[in-house]
Length: 258
Ligand code: PEP
Image (tube, rainbow, N blue to C red):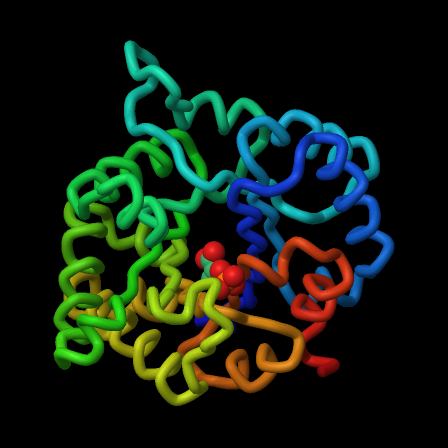
């Protein structure tokens, strides 16, 4: 089994308009070179309104950064006011779609069953899902973290094929570490990612477990990325706040030089 190439993803959340996105991508592309793209895959996940502009810049300047989305509906089309379909994203050359981010789970009440439907639709449209999971502080303090993560993984991936799971991405994002500045220790982040890989192995077999890329997310910054990425089960990072500055995001992508 080939080594898993790290995937560094920038989740912009509800930040930047399309003009700011264009300027950001140009700045980021000046900061990265071919050696960086050879050592890590990079994706950016702007708001929906920026995808067309971002795709045009990436394509016109042949920038090897993958375009990502933050969410989608599972239906192909229909009466779903405010939603965007996987087919619409695929048409814009979107490659990765985040599903089940904790902000969607907590603020918009997204349940595991909906995350599972989203994953199937994303895969059906030929894109790669990044499924987020992770425990809240309350669950952690009640010693329920492992059970929560396992339940999210089992329910989120239910019914997928082994090869689909082996080619997708799961992000371990402890909720208490997202946007708080409290990064998990490398040992805690490794334990969460190893647990996810174990669940994948138990449910989908050794090949899927060896192939699935598991990101850590939660206050990743240039100063802490290298020690997190050094862990055996961490194959990349899902980055929020620090992905909004080209300088800090490019330093995270170049974590081997930190
Ligand atoms: C995220 O949005 O997934 C995230 C991890 O945010 P932050 O890096 O700001 O904690």
